[in-house]
Length: 243
Image (cartoon, rainbow, N blue to C red):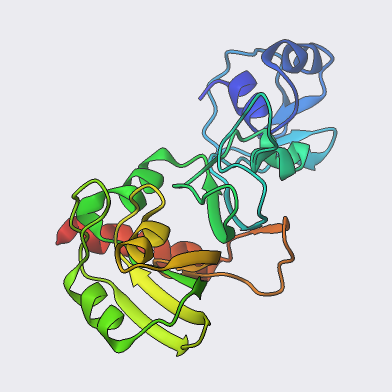
């Protein structure tokens, strides 16, 4: 990898700004001053420092966000705030994007990354990555609804969903439920309940694959995945590939 690209990707400025830093002799590679922007370096084996501080190269970033309602699961929008707008400049430098999407009025777990390969794997319908939601539903959710969801329901566009696991926490005029599905059709949870004559009035995603929403994250807050969480995602990806 070119030295200027590595430094730029790590957040030390644009290629033009990095070249100025190099010209001033502020960067050392394996102890020697490096001024050539095209110098090939290996971030795994070479020691790179800027003004005496080691440069730690990172290619990918993985963030767990507690998405708030009213914010779009997108990278940019002309009218509304997006989840990327909630990030700091250090995170935005990596150009992360949301993996899948939550509706504007839905809150909960959202993964943001710039790892396109992993994102594609998690979103591929063939992988059937489970996602669990908590919802408040206008109407009494019954055992019949649970059985219907377990078979799959017909949506308003005649699409038949894959089976879902519906767990009724409270059945009343306003019911509380948890639903696990392995698809991500547009407004799917809401449309599944509409198919049985009920309306979702609050929706929150709790899990996505092995990731579980960190309840210490307040609405709009985010953190990097732990090594354990990241390894669980990688393991999920590799196991699905083998299958």
